Length: 192
Image (cartoon, rainbow, N blue to C red; front, side, top):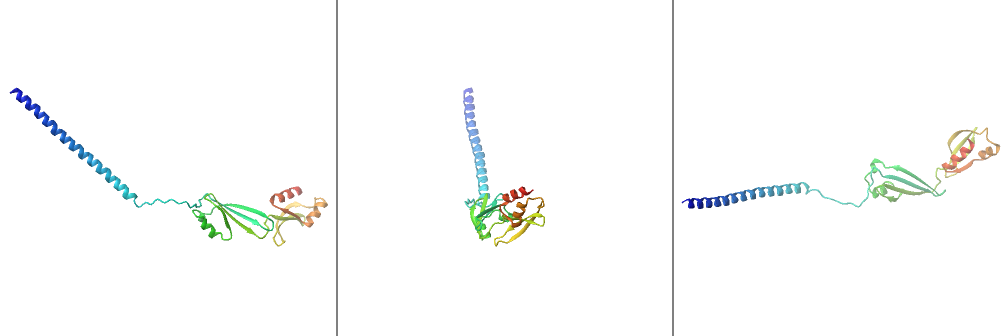
């Protein structure tokens, strides 16, 4: 009888082990299945949140707040090229080349990038860097020379003509033509 009890206990242990293994297996599968369903649900939510996002790529350059605007003017009567560089205006930020073509109709867009917009035009006149230096009352005066040959008073300096040699006074009576700010500064420094 002891043998049969022992065999019965072994048999019961084996059956119990098999049943426990089946229960653990089904429980693990259920946990695994729940985790998988949770992952799928999270993935679906992610797709739903991002399905209305459309990614676009543009190769069209636009201006930025750091863009510089360069104006180049070629004066045909004196053959001088004058260049002025400015910071971009707020309303011109994030604009493309066509915007500048339409805004600056008197200018040609010479170069366009997000760093610099270069505008160019030719003007049938002389630039404003042509001067005539003359004597006015007892001082040296600076006149700008207009395209039509007229002289417009720009500035009366504080340089007295009373102490200048006669030769310089004769030149100043006729007027000394000077081209450019550097030449003007050099001439005036000679008389100081």
